[in-house]
Image (tube, rainbow, N blue to C red; front, top):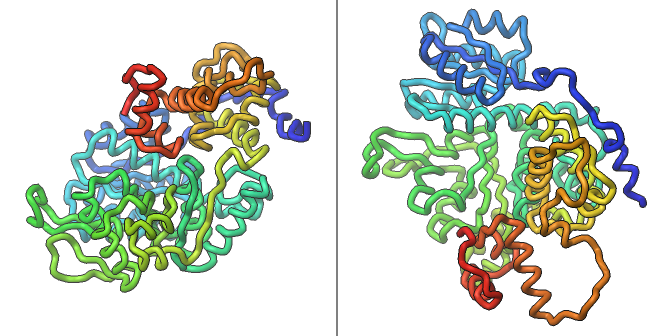
Length: 469
C-alpha cells in the first residue's frame, strides 16, 4: 500500500537506555525549607526531576551549571526577590518556563510577574492539583516555544510542534504562517478533538508576541455567573466571597494572546462585553468604575457554525464579523489520510516514554484498522486509544484483538445480510456511545443530535439508562 512507507518505525521498536534522560527538570526557589520540600515532593511523585535553591543567588548558580526547563520561584525572599530572578532568566533565554508563587497575592504583583515573563501565578496556599496543572501548562508552553524556534530545522510537514503531512494540514500550516505574521484576530473552527488549541498556540509562539503570555480560556467550562469575573477580574467586595481584588484573564494576557475556546457558548450579554475589548482594547473589572486598557491579541475557537447561530439570533452578528478577520478550519482526522499513522507513531512514542515501557510493535492489521476507522473523536480520541493500548499491552506487539471492540467492528467485512436503515442507525449510535465510554453528552455532540433525542433512540434500542451524562 502507498502508506507503508510511514510504517518503517514499527519494524524496529526503539528502546531508551535511561528513561530519566527525558524527564523535565524543575528548579524550585524559595527561602522556606518547608515550602521547597512540599513542592519537591509533589513534583517528584509525578516523575519530574526537581532541584531546589534557598535564594536567587543559589538559583543562578544552578542554572549556570545545569539545563533547566521550568523555574518555580517565590516572590518575597531576603535580599533579592523573585521578580529579579524572572528578569535575570528572561534576559538570557526564552526557553525556560517560569511560575511565580507567593503568600502576598495582589493584582499588581500578579500582573508584574506575568509581564516580566512568568507563565503563571499561584497564590499561597495552593492545592497539589493547582500546582501540577500550572506546571504541566508551563512546560507545554516551553515545548511550543522551542518547537517554534527550531521550525527552520524541523521536518517540512511538522511545523509549530504539530504532526501531519497531509494536504489538508499543509493548508492549515500556510494559514497559520499568515496569521502569525499579523496581529489580527483569528477564528479557528473544527470538530471537537481536532487540535484547535494547538493551532492557536502555534500561531502565538511563531509570532511577535511569543515572549508574552498565552492564556487559554474555556468559555464553555466556566459557569456563566463566573465568566465575567474570570475574564475581566474583580475588585474586593464586588460580590459575596470577593475577599480580595483579582486580575482577570485579559489583564494577565496583556502583551500576549488570549485564546477563547468554545466562544459559541457565551451569552449575548457577555458577547457585548467581549465586543468592547475587541473594539476599544478596554476591560472593566467587576465592581470597578474605571476602564483598563489591555494590549491583547484574541484568538477564538468553536466547533459550531457561528453563521448559523447568527441567523438564529444566538450569536451577535457584529461580534462575528469582528472575530472572523482571519479564519482557519482544522480538518477532522478522517480527512487527513496517512496523518493517522504519523500521529500513531508520535503518540506511541509519547506514551512509552511517559510509562517507561518499551515501544510496542503494531501489526499491519492494527495499522489498517487505525487508517480506516472514522475517528468521531478525532486526534484526541486517537491519543486516548494509543495510550490505552500501551498501558494494557503486556506483549511486544499489538494486534487487532487488542483494539477496542468498536474499532474491531469497523474492519471492512463482507455484508452477509441486508439491513434496514433503522438497524444501521442503531449500530452506529451504539458504536459511538461505546467509543466515548458511555458519555451521552459527548455521544450526542458527535452524532449531531441533542441528548433528549439520543435518550429516545436508546430507549427504542432497549438500552438501559446507565450511560454517563
